[in-house]
Length: 477
Ligand code: NAD
Picture 1 (cartoon, rainbow, N blue to C red):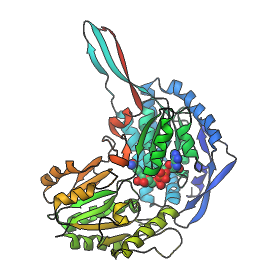
Picture 2 (spheres, rainbow, N blue to C red; picture 1 turned 90 degrees about the horizontal axis):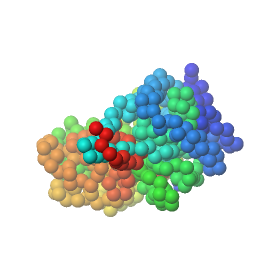
Picture 3 (cartoon, rainbow, N blue to C red; picture 1 turned 90 degrees about the vertical axis):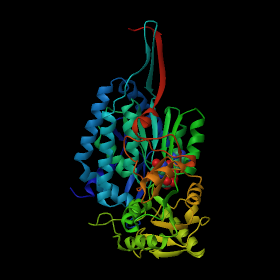
Picture 4 (tube, protein in one colour; picture 1 turned 180 degrees about the vertical axis):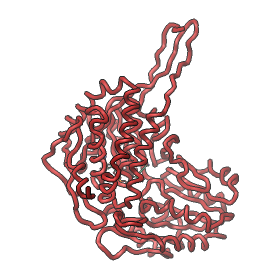
């Protein structure tokens, strides 16, 4: 089977275990060419009634049998892994990332499904003595609306699907219009693994997302995307008091102390900033480097940046593909131009790559300062500013001076010292001598401040798809 053959997997939305027929379609652009290469179904806001009704109907029986659900999650993991060679190219064509990175997303999806299938949820019996019985239980919410962005369409969808279904909810997922296809294909290959109506996927241009939020059936909205849209989601959900989890933007700092071994940390630092072209909510977006090592660090990172292979994701050995979409491509150019016009120096990259599509050189910026847009805003692209600092305490104050608070890291030759500084960061996760070290199925992931509301992953992520219920009465001894 060739890569384009597998596109048939994304030909239709999945509602109630079947194709949902749509009158229209919309074009999906391959960011490596800038051209439309496929059509995705345009589900209209009106058609959502049918989809949510199917999910509501399926909820009645899906919520009952926990062991059945756990088995289905395990089977889904096996199905996904058995079909990665068909699925990964679809993701690469629409997202731009390398085939290796696309393959990884589907493995992550399987890992999350197995983690939630195996997670033990102990009964919480608070009291059971001669006089009384008291138990705190968790009930599923019902139908969940899940809305995802274009940077990690499969991983981020599964961070919602696996815990939501494990908890007994049913779900309707809407991927970004930039990357609808892989999620459609995922739902299609899982038809029959989950009972009809349990996992539904719809695609279409906005305002489909807003309708997913305001629709009366779903009891929860789980949203990953920008802070600006997250605010709208919170407002839309407030109307009928839907529960929300919001995973939003970040401007994640890394503080590098003067006692680090620069050559040793540079590759890891680079990866943490540039993987997926920097289009990761938790990518390092600004580095504060002690003045004693800042020039050496700039040079080490620049050397790596110059050696990275940037090409189409389908080309063997590609490390970074194109930026996903034109507005994001333009934004990265604009932020670099703004920095350079304000005195920054690109020590590596700095320019677009002269070919079709949205290719940009990985860029390191020196002579940057707080107050420049590239430092103060979320760039979400392949460019990293390296800011010099003298005083450790001041660096942390500057790192915290942001509306965001998703992740942060502190790097030092003395890990104990770094660990003492870690709690001073205003972020949902703080890593020591690494970045994003806590992004694992069993640990909570979520933002402080404007980076989010609530968390995903671990038992905490599952809890957010449930509501507490107390059962109290006479002794059951
Ligand atoms: P976006 O906010 O523009 O879009 C996200 C999703 O929301 C898309 O599916 C879009 O169609 C939908 N949408 C648009 N308007 C809507 C509305 N009014 N109501 C409901 N849904 C609506 O974000 P994006 O550009 O796709 O993704 C990039 C952003 O996502 C970055 O800010 C990044 O930091 C953030 N992100 C956060 C996390 C996290 O876990 N915190 C992870 C990945 C990406």
